[in-house]
Length: 196
Image (cartoon, rainbow, N blue to C red):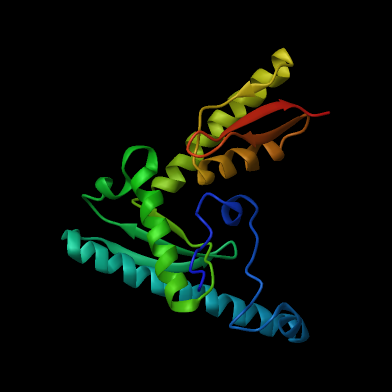
């Protein structure tokens, strides 16, 4: 029996930032023998290919739904990224980004089907993720202030993997506090506490 499962979007690929162990079908050992310049070029071209595959998939969905949007594919922060901009796209984001997360998972599956490699693809629609990052930075800073003022842990509301990563990044950049996730999806949340 063939295992065709892929990592879910809320698992370690988003939170841990792990990279696939093969680049264009090469094992890590073979990739290490290449010069750093060659590795970077191969890696970035593969990531860009993943973003192109995902962009084609999203474009097909937009055509089916009869939505208009401009699609940009790029590589940012070592990840393939697809951005969709245009009017009338709020339905593709959904409440608190739930539909966007589902579309991102479908796009990742489309990439996996063509490449055989799990993808860390990030899909954004209408700038939702950039706006949400700013909101979550404010939430994280507020939690840190409360922890520093009262010395007690602060439990945040349940969040998606993307949202938790944004909060962890802000908290980890501040001294005197630490954060950890607890619980099980879809009720996984962050606790911010004083650092030991």
